[in-house]
Length: 161
Length: 252
Image (cartoon, rainbow over all chains, first blue to last red; front, side):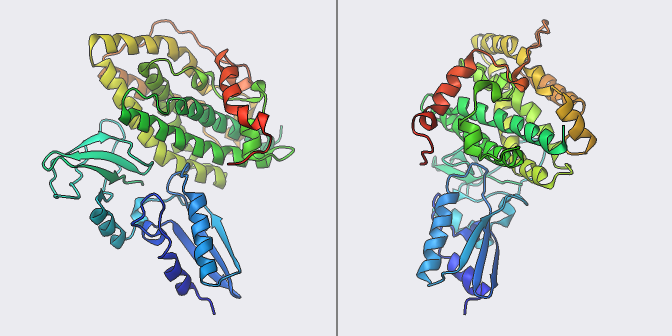
């Protein structure tokens, strides 16, 4: 018998292709799992509209379900409500930091223009003396920072609300 | 005109603005002035093409003969595109690229904010998703306008010239015809009147900080929303549509 909590467990083994340390559950992009008469229905949501990883994620879910001998399933994509970094799990944030990516900070959604620069602590040495190098980093969801203390460049997972 | 026809056209405009500007920015991939900006501009391009996908998909479903977003993006003729002329303007130098982006972002952000209240739930959902990205775009483009304007003598002069040449295309962003009138009455889209003052304020605030001055001439170009484009559009489409025209129905 397939049940919903079992499916959630399986999805813990599917990793985000661009941040391979996070499972899609940690990232908060699995929005719902429903099982009716052994038929599994999963809804996922993209982090960004142009996220090129959605196709891969859908394939990876399919592969995982097939490995678990689940044959009757469907995967939907939904964009509303829109994904927010608030949906990332606490465990996910710790994993991100250990991996060298600063997790999203609790940014207040202040004025987009002329806002105070955000303090992002260095994931390596925890110094708060860091600087923004570029608002846009190696993927749509990250910004590029550098630590002024240990000189290490690092990615910051941008807060999206 | 029915509500469905009007919404089809409105979504086409939103999608075409995103698609054509996204295509323009994509042309900078590997050609950015510095590595960080190369990455930033292509990130913005990716967001815009992602947004175009959502708008065109919805628009295509409402067409009299339903079309996929790929058919709309790649298989229309130039006069069937309804993007504003602003977004098809060439990348020029970095100041031109940034100023074009700023004029667009400053309009797109308040528009998406108002669309959150749309009576059309699906459109409101697309706006909600896109807005989060557009906030970053506006922050990026306005910071650069300030840095270039309030930078060296040369950077100031060059971006001031960009403003002189591009501002004339910005007014078309506030174009309205019977499509808008019908949708405004239905509570589906906001009026241009409600967006314009917000755009103007952002423009004035940022230009002031950037020590730039609004051009005195008040030329206004339009036509894109009705399918009349500048000479740059054909070249852009030739490049963008090449693969689909040469190998119909090809997929990655």
